[in-house]
Image (tube, rainbow, N blue to C red):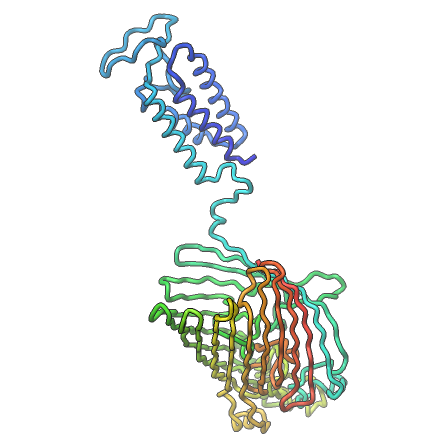
Length: 549
């Protein structure tokens, strides 16, 4: 039983004690009710259900309710009882007549006053019951009302297929050479089938009117050397448990409706209609400030700015590397042209600092070791930071760094038409250009003369429902993607198209159906090949079962 019920019962008993009929033949009932109430309070105090202070408070409340009717003063055990049933109450200010031995005097209380007392006490008890949720099955503490919980579970079958004209599997010592750096693939010919799992569970807390905090746990690799581009966990690890880490952990302050500041692991705060620049599962760390003013009811603007540490490097006498950062800004608008047509457009600059590699100047030097890329997918132009040492010693301990700098200019757009019997026709597009590529700088820094491959674009056409909160919602889509070697940082772009990275061109298509609210099954097909690198074409089939909450 909920611990609020004893308080409710005590309130009802005290209510009865305060409003019992003031007739002599009911004296024994009053005394019995008083004694029962006191004993019940004592037992509840002993069992820890009520504190002594709470019990005394309930008694005082009943006494106060009784005094409102003009009764005689009350003692700590309940209303005092005096006189006889037919003896009227003494006039105000009069001296009470002496009470003869064996005679009990009970003042007369009009029915209208008794009813008023009943109503007042009843209302107080019911108000407290509502506020404290007495007797509500499964009632939780009220502070939990500030929390919103969310998450999803995705179970996936994935098949990776490799056409026969790929470069065949080669020994690792060949694939790891700098000339093959953009390759970064072990399997190039053997079909692979696997089951994968993604689980995410989070909570957002409304700390105050202007402050929220959120966390989310997810599967996927964690820590140094982990893969930031995906939260999938491959099944088939001899039944060992999946790793779990935070992909959201932030505090957000919104002093007004059109401005906010967020710090921590913030997810992806930028508008990204496709996966050209940012993978679906990527979560950035850092600080973000944003403005979202509305010019009119149908036209709103937004500005997002942020600073994100990519790799923290501690300065020491033995290293000349610097911490890697991303400074980013995006501005755009959303225009509801009509009730059924909307258009969103944005421009962004993603400016990476110190992300390029630097060549160690001598055979024994290690001062630029930390300029190497700790994680890559594939596609970016790379070089061996330890080239002098490896050439001199005949070693193959390659330390791979990015050849180009990256200052990515990005334009994004979405055009949405909801004029087809409730279905939407949505066109998404992205274009990116790496303004940081400088052929002369790369030659001086890496001793490599590289062609410029620095643009990318992606477009997708979707028809159907934009969300899956209703049963029988569905959509289908087809898209095209072309991303050159050094258009974007390959570590943070899509992880599914050609199994991740850049230097890829091709198409993709898929469909998704909600067989229950927020419960969907989906099928996707990706087909891509290289643009300029070694022959490496990969087709990927994915079948997903997703439940979101």
